[in-house]
Amino acid sequence: MELREIVRKIDPTLEIAEVLSEPPNIVAITYSEDTPKILKIFPIRGRQINHLQREACALKRGEGIPGIPSLVKDYGRQEDFYAILREYAKGKTVEEMPGRTIQDEHLYSLLLETIHSLHTRGIANLDINRENVVVSPNEQTATIIDLGHAIFDSDYSFWNGWWKIHQAKQDDLNDLKNLCWKVPGII
Ligand SMILES: Nc1ncnc2c1ncn2[C@@H]1O[C@H](COP(=O)(O)OP(=O)(O)O)[C@@H](O)[C@H]1O
Ligand SMILES: [Mg+2]
Figure 1 (cartoon, protein in one colour):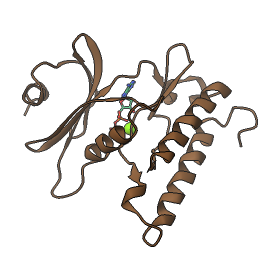
Figure 2 (figure 1 turned 90 degrees about the vertical axis):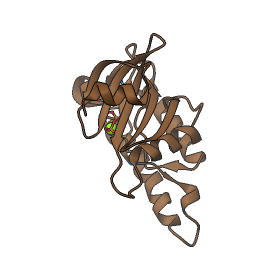
Figure 3 (figure 1 turned 60 degrees about the vertical axis):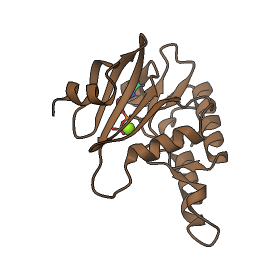
């Protein structure tokens, strides 16, 4: 099925402005009510939990935390796809920044605060890498855009997998440090 047709079936009010990633996992900038938003459509494979279902869940649990986009709409399962609409974070990914790193201490502290807030709400494994962090055009704020690999405290107990979530939180902090290695005193 052609992309525009898939999008029309999911939400006829959306208009595709730019396709950022091609099928099977589609990420596109769309316009709805004159505002750019990110539409993600992933195919559902068998009974496997879809990354997008996980992302929708993480975004709902993290709603209101500065530095993560809000979930505009969870379309849920639509035939063979799962689809969500997410707030668009204007700016560049760290991959596109000079030196492919964050060099600013202020941005490091903001991201650290975002990560601590997510951890406090029981969300970890934030898949923090150069392609999943967007820095705003004035370089005053940063957004962790992709929570598709998140795991949740509530899925584990002290007796069952507690170590896994503890390790995931440590990994998030190390991943942030690796992204900000040029900030003095970080590593
Ligand atoms: N708000 C955004 N601003 C800029 N680029 C974005 C934004 N959202 C997504 N992208 C681009 O699209 C890519 C894929 O989006 P992402 O949500 O990370 O999907 P995936 O789950 O496929 O990794 C990102 O790595 C980034 O390059
Ligand atoms: Mg990503």
